[in-house]
Image 1 (cartoon, helix red, strand yellow):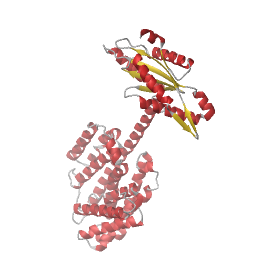
Image 2 (cartoon, rainbow, N blue to C red):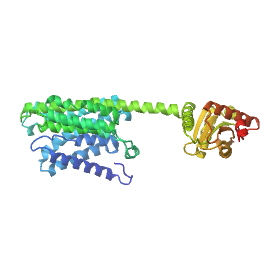
Image 3 (tube, rainbow, N blue to C red):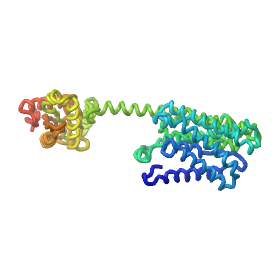
Length: 468
């Protein structure tokens, strides 16, 4: 629905074509001389215009109505009922769009419980408006009473909107969908399919509630979009089963029959409210936990590991090394930006933060996969190089030092040049793993000597130099 500026007619042509195709399909699928059992046109159009609001104006809504009328006329309907019936259909689209378009995007995309309830309210309002207009304008074409007409319109529009609209509102972008390559747990899906089959086999009015436990399990496991697809599948399956009397409902061709079907529709529609709210809350909890885990793992300023995350991973690395018969070498380096306090004092903490970010980015560019980089606090950083002995790691440390020395931080008209002092310690191959505290203490002592000997240099721990 988004086209180049020079193709302004294409979005409206696409909207007309979509409406015509959906309406035509709904007309061809409905029983003879009866309202459609499942009419998704209105909910689909409301969702499309909420996701792509550029065409949601007077011209767009008028085009939707004309496309509905054209599809009706193409199927042999008289033009007068086609005009009135599709005006009722258009009222659903307009009402739902007006009520939901004012909501913040977070609520409109059903990412909060309030958003889910708002969508339910908008669908109920749209169905109420359409049913009321049908009783006023379309009554001459119905043999049923006004009550039966209102109930039939309301139940169909409400249940269909509740099942279809959440799919469109929660749908991720194509790019996000392609990025999400996680495996889907099959157990909740299989249980849902089994519960639907059991509902049809067992039958009776209470059988429509059989899938609720499986839907709640799906809601706790899957994303809101996938849950919306499953509620659409489950709800439409149950509606068709009730209408075809597969669940042993009594459906005589009379006003009580319409009331029974309305009750089943509304029960099925309300059935999906719980799973959608649970899916929304579950997604919010997962997002919150992911943010908390990220904050606990990644330093917010520099994007490298935090001290606690580094400690966990480094200890796990040392323990894994200790368990191997042929232990690989390992080196730990302590790095400290020279004269960092004077940078903060002279240029301010904002410039100091910029220095830290560019310093960390420079180190990350020089390191390889599997090598750990963390900020220990302030301007002090630590690096672990698995598989590299200290004598060879000095070349890596020199490469890091030169890369930092070549780094220039631009501040206004000035270019700040920074340097780094590095101390390192480690263990050779086939030797016992020292504790992390011991490695850091010896590397820190080497760093202190690098500072004392003039800064912008690399020093190796004395004990390690003696062993070498």
